[in-house]
Length: 212
Image (cartoon, rainbow, N blue to C red; front, top):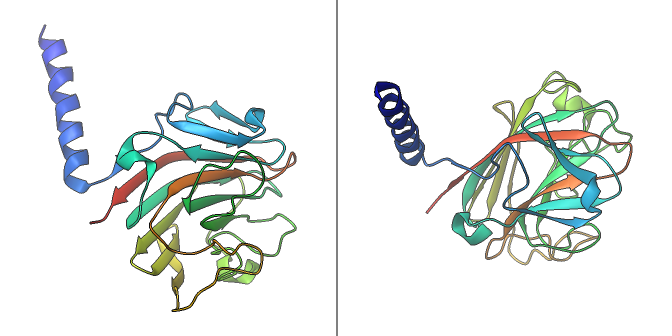
């Protein structure tokens, strides 16, 4: 009985701490409950407490109940591990799409050694970073934390706590050359990218702190 009471109190304390600091987990570490895959469903699986992408192009969209899976101002943290030559990404202000690369929202690049010259932490095709920009910050085979802060029209990106991008959407912004809807608007959901069959990327500890 005492053990049961202690466990209950510990769980309550953890829940209270989470409420106080404002962080909310979007992934249960066990399965894809609250997530919906657009594209090849087999490209995503859960292994050792992480969502793993490996297969033909697909995207795993958060579709759960937190804020009705729509976030405008927030801080998002994702722990990422890339295997050699892997490409992936974390999208925000996006929406579910059944096929292809998401037309809406922004991609924060995940790529340490893939042939694409646009590297991890880039706000893809908005503020692009090269290998020299992230040298010494992230490595394949090691977990790193990608932090995305969106406040108003400003996006700030950190890798392992170091700021690598800060960009404010200018007036009259009409998206990028490839996606007109790559813009800050009324918010949207979060998505993880599965880029190609040779890319293996692990995502875990996916947590968000809504602002305002």
